[in-house]
Image 1 (cartoon, rainbow, N blue to C red):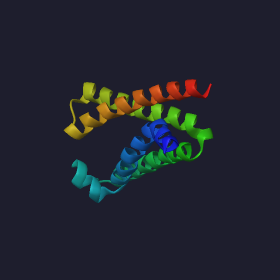
Image 2: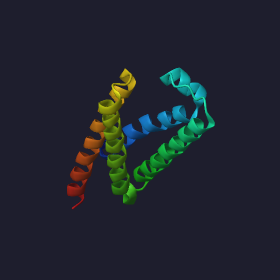
Image 3: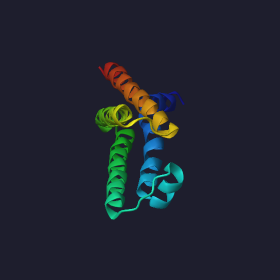
Image 4: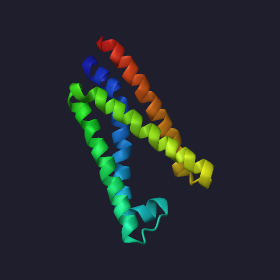
Length: 133
């Protein structure tokens, strides 16, 4: 039981990221769901193409996180990717807020969550790197 708890605590950042990013990817790649969830109308093939590419990018990143959960040899790489993914998304959203104005509450929540997950992932990387030495 203690091993299961330790595993969950070590991987919490990856589990939380997967639980958010996989559904988001599916929403981004599904124009009918996207228009209901985020009030975004996909009116061109180019926009549809871009959103499906983002969907696959998100799913590809998620696959690395899953690999890090299954195989401890990939945990560090998965955690580093999680840091990069979350903090670059948060930075991009922050730049947009400064240059374009404030988005809906959902995107404001997203930037806060991305910063928190990115910083928590940095903490996890440092904590478990020290424990493995």
